[in-house]
Length: 217
Image (cartoon, rainbow, N blue to C red):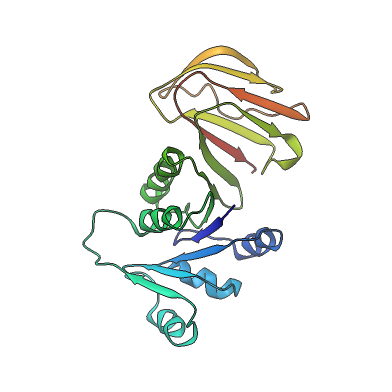
């Protein structure tokens, strides 16, 4: 299975990223515009460098142009209809990635954070797993039943928010606040800040898409 890492230009805790990447293996690494700064700090090889390069410092860009012959540059016009992160995600899918991790996809720009969460649906439609991960959160979308192991959680809290207007017949087993065949609406906060209390927990749904956020303070 091909695994891809996308490092984009949001907020990245370098100590967290270093610790996270210690136990991860990726076949494909894509740096997105100013995410190249984090790539340089992390000292990891990069397969593709993607973007319109309107936010990455020129000296870092030039460093990689001169010293990274194994990296393929894909430069885009700033006047485009998709974000650099979307282009990187589509590239990862095109290259056959079945699991995609995005670092730097959250941060102070709420518009970009929301857009990046919505971009996860591109992967979902293509039957690929995609996760946005930062120091405090692991975010992904589901449209089918899943089992979660407590010891593998990113943090002690787990929140479920409808991505579609309605998610029908949601059942939660192994949770502090269980549900049984409950319809969840996108304008309600029913699924926020739950906890898993058993070794394994299940999320079941009949239709719709849920945003799953594994979180820690």
